Image (cartoon, rainbow, N blue to C red; front, side):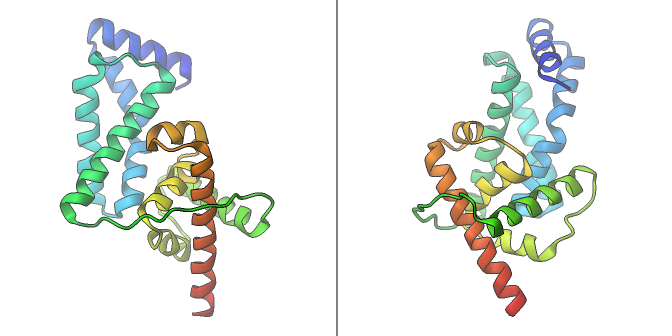
Length: 195
C-alpha cells in the first residue's frame, strides 16, 4: 500500500468507522510491527501477544489522533516501543545504556555489517527465519538502545528523522548510537570467530 492509499484508508476509517479500512491499515503494518517486536524479545508467543496489544491500542485510539500516512507509522512504532518497555520492566530485563559518541563514515567493515543486516531483513520479510545465527547472537548481546537503533535503521529500514521521533533522541545522537552498535557487533563477530 502506498502513502496515498494509506491516507485514504485512515481518512475513511476515521470518518465512517468502517472496519474494512482499519483492516487494511492493520494488514499494512502487522508484519512490520511483529518483526520489530519479535526481534527484540525472540519469543514468538510473547511477540504475537504484544503485537495484538499494539493493534488493540491503535483501534481504540485512531479516531482520537490526527494522523497521516507518515505520522501513523511513527505513532504505531511508539506504541510498540512503549509496550516493549513495559514488558521489559515487568520482566525486569532492563539493560544499562551508555552514552556514546562517534560517526560511521567510510568504514567498509561496518558498512558490510549493515549490509548483512539488510539481507537478514529481506529473509525475514519473505517469511524465513534469520539465517546468520552469529549475527543474531551479536545483536542480542547489544545494550537495549543500541539494539533498538539497529533494528529500526536496518531491519525496519527507517531514516534517522523517523527514528528520532520514535526514540525522542536527536539525529546526531542516533548516528553515534548506530556507529557504536556496529562497532560492538563487529567486535562480537570477531570474538565468535576467534572464540
